[in-house]
Length: 422
Length: 86
Image (cartoon, rainbow over all chains, first blue to last red; front, side):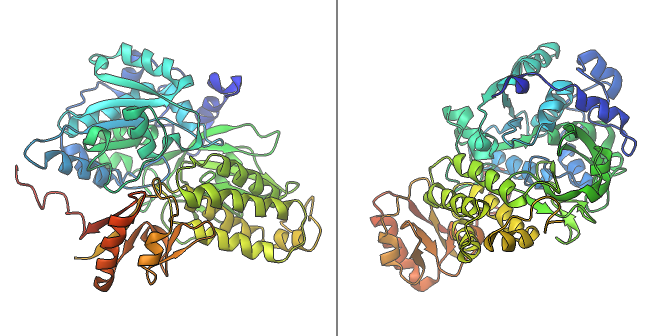
């Protein structure tokens, strides 16, 4: 990766501290927080304090995963706890802190791991304690490992935590790829006939949890479900980190926003005028394009008024950029990032990228748009992981949001600056 | 008890035997890989079967040259409902 990725950005953290809307929770201990600073800010720590009651507290808090799927954390953890106790020979569960951040537009997890590694490890230790002493792993890209190892060294009983390096690929953070990398050194998804919570690493019940989710677990373990719900909405409680990027001169920034936050407010907080944008990519490369107006960021709600935050990526497109060309570049990248294990993905994604690039390049064949739609429907749901349907979702949102641009392209012109997309 | 035909896409090579044995259940896509007829989403990876198709599906499981197919009988038990050692 580029050298810039090896050094942690310090700029985003200043923006968090300037944040007027939401008091910082996850990064409250400030930049590069060490063990002492961490305890000073968040209070003393005892991983067993919440015990098995932690899972109940997570349920009351309504915490959902912050890595993309927004699955309820308590449900996942309870399933792993149940599988671990099953059978004559109880298998010791495994909890993995997932810091792989393959989304090119996401940088909130690496910012969190750089500045608040202890909060992440607190959450990991608390979940492991709630699962009768599960084994613990931290899985993170090379650039994040020294900071994690330093944090582990500062903690009492830190040596029980194993650290594994995540490769810099888009799919390296998919949960079965995480387990495959730790078990076999191969970070590609595996066929999942059984859930990882039943049979994961070495056949043991396995929980793969995003690092931000774990940091939220640590806060709930300390302060309880009611405190957690003081931010956000009833349907989307708590806060989340978002990685916001946009057209120059907008600087990449990590913000902590309350659940159900208005997209336009988040864009303004990051220094953008929503009226000067043609569309916003929400949720990452497996997310959706939406119009900047009147969308709330929430994993639940009607699709015309809510945008699912996924892994917390918010990327704005200005009026001068062609949405079709932007989407074509992303889909080409996604096709290239296929693990080439599953036929529909190995052949279908390059086929989609090719059609989209022909439209972007100005080919005026009116059948191309329906062919793109057909290919999307064909590959969806047919793979070991959700890479095909993630890609299809992005393309179908482009067909919807950039409908006027598609018509223009297919009749031989690009609408250009401030064109049909405006 | 509903039976599902599970397709392991990482093993499937698109040989097409399954589509021949189960013409009412599986079609083939542009590249020869099986597509469950009339199904969307993950029902195309864990394909729900009618009882009438069970036998042919079992045969497809045995004959698939890439061992990419398997039958899943019934639902996975809820945590705690089938716990002998508890």
